[in-house]
Length: 273
Image (cartoon, rainbow, N blue to C red; front, top):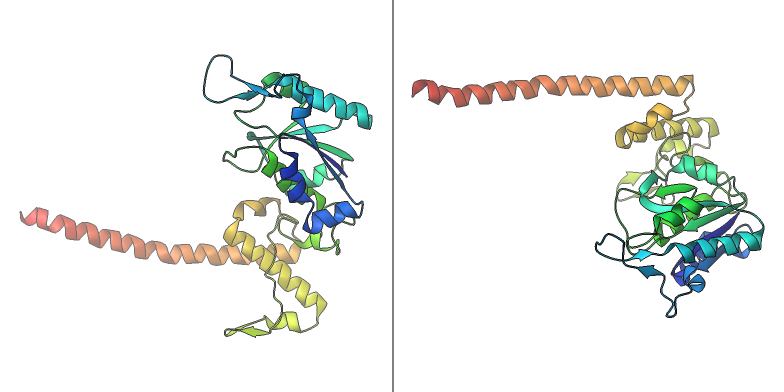
């Protein structure tokens, strides 16, 4: 996997990505990361890459020419026109499914805007995907690009020391990851679940799957509609849903009684008056 980041701040992305697991993967040749400085492609006398927006408004807009020229030079150098991912809060929210799709590419270009964004004409000419890391606004696209590169790289063979871990973490099969424990067996009165000490691999696997299902139901129930569950796991989930429904029913009458009592207490003085 080859990452090409079009940015005004190459040092920022390179210093962030050339560390830890991603940095080691790059050093080992499992992935490659380059930052292309858009400012190198401006023809402005003082190196400017932005200008005031037509129609007025606050802030500055990145000009189309330096962005497009940087991309075209990259394409000429590598001999292809790779996908261009534009980092923008207006884009589709990035998730694990998108990461898995992008991990199949050989080259990816991350286009990082700044100021009030990039001239729309540049986006129309080169952008193929509009992606966001969430419904909020950042000062630039560098941090979102780094987040996505980290996520995608974990799916590239050889990047993780244990490739199986990428298959077991949160969002695999649309389920959140199960709880993890390490030594000591007891800490502040809290013990490691006995099944994890049993050495019984089948029971451990089943326990972990059940914990993933339970945690997903509690924290991200919206994911369960796309979860890949076998017959036993579906039965376990159905049981949890029944328990949840029974709890809600048991609480409902109590709430209604309290509301009724409160209403009668409020109404009584009005009647006497």
